[in-house]
Image 1: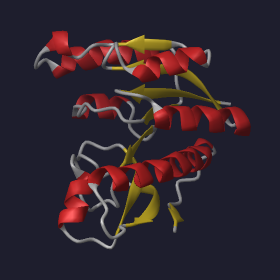
Image 2: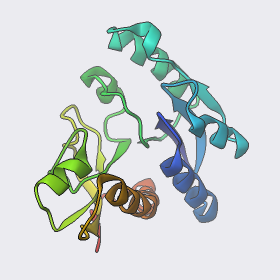
Image 3: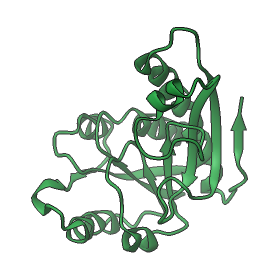
Image 4: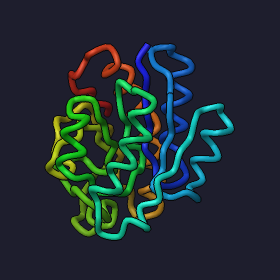
Length: 196
């Protein structure tokens, strides 16, 4: 059974979707939930599920990203995970950290990549007048939000949509897509999963 570490920064709703699916599917088990913010609500939620948790506050490290990542990697490596899932982890990782876990680190992004890498994805989709938005699971590489595509789910943009309304519908699709991609990835299937 694969061991999975999940990196979060906030409430951890995608983390919970992954944890639930691992429990139901029996293909993997969460060995750590780690956050860069000690007050992240997702840490409490993970602990309530009996999952080991840790926090490495990025703020005391200032601009020293390597030192922050060394502390983060120490927490991760202590649990010996096979797969790392970024689930709302809001820190840009250095190439050195990415190389350390290359080929076994996944991320979910709230746009139909390659459209709108980075932040403010929903505002950008609305400003462009897009007919649809969505989410993407991809392997993490040194180029931001540009790793090999593992899955996408589409969400129509509705008349009168606001950023918040669109974001809520995309998040609901993230909760469906990410577990399905992880299930496949855990058994070595990297064929992109495309959900309508």
